[in-house]
Amino acid sequence: MRKFTIVGGGITGLTAAFYAERYLPEDVTITLLEATDRLGGKIDTYETGEFAVERGPDSYVFRKTAMTELIEDVGLGDELVRNGVGQAYVLHHDGLHPIPKQTVMGIPLDVNAFRETTLLSEEEHEDLKQMLLSPPDVKAPDSDVSLGLYLRERVGDPIVDRLIEPLLSGIYAGDIDQMSAMSTFPQFIEGEKKYGNLYEGMRHLRPEQRVAEVGAKKVGQFASLKRGLKSLTDRLAERLERTEIVLNCSVEQVSEREDGYRLFTNRGDIDTDHLVLTVPPRLIRQFLPKVDSDFLADMKPHATATCSLVFKEADIELPFVGTGFVTSQEADVTITACTFIDQKWPHAVPEGYHVLRVFLGRPGADDIVEASDEEIIETALHDLRGLMRIHREPIQTVVSRLRDGLPPYAVFHADRVKALRAEMSRVYPGVILAGIAYDGIGMPDCVKSIREQVKALREKN
Image 1 (cartoon, helix red, strand yellow):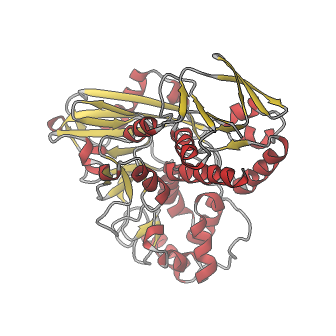
Image 2: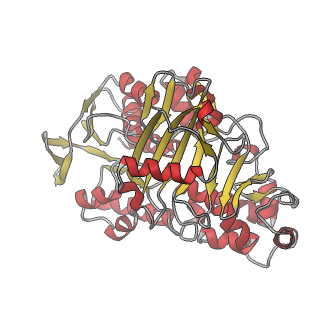
Image 3: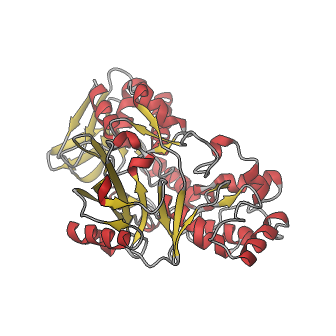
């Protein structure tokens, strides 16, 4: 191996280059190609004055250590910050309801967790309590199942539709009833198998497994960087010593050679021995026509948009003190969630201001993403006015769109990824697939996957 080429300059591509420099021999030539004029991909922090507004992801789950290890490896460990904790809400058709404490992703850790919530009627609460104490006669699945079906059988439709679905869909931007349980929340099934039922399994989860537990810890379970996540991608690029970075270089076609591959780009042809592709599945189908096109075709990403609104503190009256809310599908609004940035990430907002980051776009209902900036802003403000008093317009707005966003992790996703990679090693040896389409949508998942694949490549060669 003499040439190692990476296509895509997002967090996965930059991480691939960083660890390639660490693990691959000194005589290997490393090249990173990026189709746009900037590095970072989905990560982009808009900075103005004392504000730091994320256009893409705003944090990662701290318990997933691969991201923290990368941050420390590039010398940004002292920049780490944890999220502020506070009450979160869910917007139902009849208004905002506090998310009950002692729950993990809406699943109770205590049978009385929902006693005081307004999300359930007294009768529904008693039904849920009975299901938890006397679990239905269902067996923990041995193979993958729909996450929605799995949860509905164990805690019932009301709490799934009103709380669990808004929370989980907010993370995966997908349809919970089509989503893979094994690829998204395998700890649910693992806990059930070990302790006999979902309720006991959740109660015995180790603290580091309790993603988004409400009211359980004073330390936030998510992490970011003081100057925004863009500071990580910037630092990664700065730390690359052996990598040639080529911006505005789009790959149009990939062909096989006797000892590797030839990339046809708008900047000329490039030959390589090994190739890392961090591009969306639709481009994999274009570049590598001999692989499982049905699976890649099924991985159509959901388009989403965000609208960050900066207000002077006196110009808006927030409906509660807390970190924000998610919306159920029964709520008569277009927005899917809203984060109160100044309360969740106080380091990013100076005193005297409120910053609201509003999310829009659901699977099958994402037309709003293609609307103009003005329409997106007005849609966000219209929905927010039904929940809070806005006395003056925001002093600044930042609209972002993610068209090649989160792919659907459908049932049997992990099995199909495994089969895809086995086929790749046979028909396209020396090509690595990495990114959010395969091993997890979180940044730590992407970092861990490509780090392990680069290390494995070193051991093979």
